[in-house]
Length: 366
Image 1: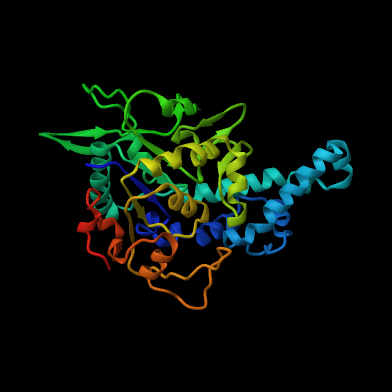
Image 2: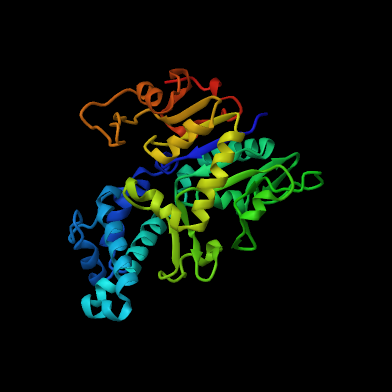
């Protein structure tokens, strides 16, 4: 079977629980929670243009001035020094970088924190089993735009797979037993918790596993590292984070600040795109301009889209803005964005029913 690149968007979580994984809802829950942000921190963020103190930001577009304020404060600090800044600015303003860092972490952690309900367990386990077996057999690449650990937990901690008469806990982060290929099935660039990009070049064929917009697990103190899943909830909110939550015009700037994410986007993702005989876009909105540009530039093979049949699409302007005047069909949208033919756009009532990883053309379009 051919190696593919599977890119997961927020539709994966939305198929499980739309209320929990809708970004607007997560941002609202964080703002309304009495223990996540202090009143002073809310006042600081709420003083930014486009954000209401009473409700907080509702979407990434409303965070546009957040990065502007951060850039200006950094510039003032560099030009004037900390002593002058302490005379010019109130303490809340001086602490603004930490406040924004904390808020971004809290939203990402809110989306990260989810347990599969009992009534969805069978559907989710069947979905995972098919996906993991496909990655095991092809060592395909996986990239996600999400912060959650819906895939990270079963990929790293393991997922029960039938092996003959036995059920084994199969881990994609481990190498195959008794195999000449010494590489694990998936690599994410971390070695014993530390970000070590040279591990991508270690001997053996494997897939890459990339959190393109970061994760609550990724932090920096002296060096970039990955927390254990058990450490995330107790981790200090002041650690430097590697999480992209911003207006679309600021996403690349935030990626550039992160040694983890800049390596993923500059080096690993282009290789994944070029390696892949096919790309499967799963639950992806199509609105990440940076990602779309890379796919158009680096990929020559087929692209398949797996999305919810109830998705609504709007055209994009030449500047990349969503034009909400008139909705367009899925086939028109994807043909315009990435030249995906209508036969390769697969709209399902529940995308977790998708099982045709090896040959997506077997999944009926529309």
